Image (cartoon, chains in turn blue, brown):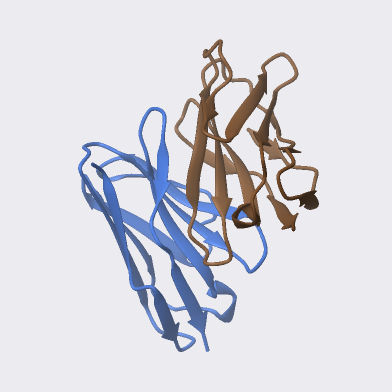
Length: 110
Length: 113
């Protein structure tokens, strides 16, 4: 069966520090991969999605970037975090008739 | 560009009753997929049900059913026999032809005993 791993669960980072969040999927090949951010009590904002290795579509460029170095690995990065980058980050993968999420990372920028 | 609209920010439902959560979408794609998710206070996103644009039958999964009206571009979720554990935020989502997966603003459901 397919599983999706996202870590860490919580993260506190100072303003100006770099960020790297990793997401990996097991049990499937060539998944569509997604990164979302969710503010407290709000909806999911699509940040990036990828339909294959090295293929990244950006919805909200800002100071975040994403990379897909391997088929089942999706990485969200920032060179310098801003206070406004705080939020709940969710990774997801989708196949034909289903789409599943990781457990999420609560990022607090201080 | 696709747009997903959930017009009900919050709803109250009595335990054991049914509740319908509204979702309308806008797309020019002929092929697309519709999803519903439950997000309890823990934050995890739980996949509930899927409906493909070419599916003729409405999707059902246990107490969840999707009322798909293609001409109206609506995909309402019906939860039957509500339970206290159904209290959560519910999101409608659509995956377009380019595989972009977009979400509505969500509806908070509170089940009363």
